[in-house]
Amino acid sequence: MSTITAPLERSASVKTGGKWKFMIGGLLILGAIAYVTVSSFQSNAIYYLTLKELNAQRTSLVGQPVRINAPLDKTSIQFDDKTLVLKFNLQEEQLVLPVVYKGVKPDTFDQGESVVAEGRLGADGVFQASTILVKCPSKYESEPAQPGK
Image (cartoon, rainbow, N blue to C red):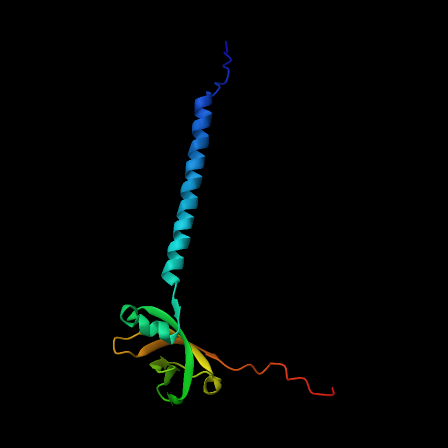
């Protein structure tokens, strides 16, 4: 003789307990994603300073990754083709920052008005640049309107 058994119904407390587990698990996953995002952003953040700001914070910025934007002193440019060492000064009013960059000299460097240099300030006061970006005057500015045209 076979017996038929009825399926057991789950109680209401078991159903709500399962929902809480999923909600807590979801919140933990979202929290982990938020933590990883914020911590990676902070580790990749680099200060963007002018020469005046760098000079004011010089002692606290030694050895820290920094990005500087300042006018280029065109008379100070020295480039060694054999070692690919580029030396130049950034100058803003009376402040001068010597910069050393190892790599290929950008084609537009000699025409540059200002330079954005990313790197680290050494204890000797020389900025060791790992990346440079040259800002040139725009060749694509519109010409002034000619009278009579």
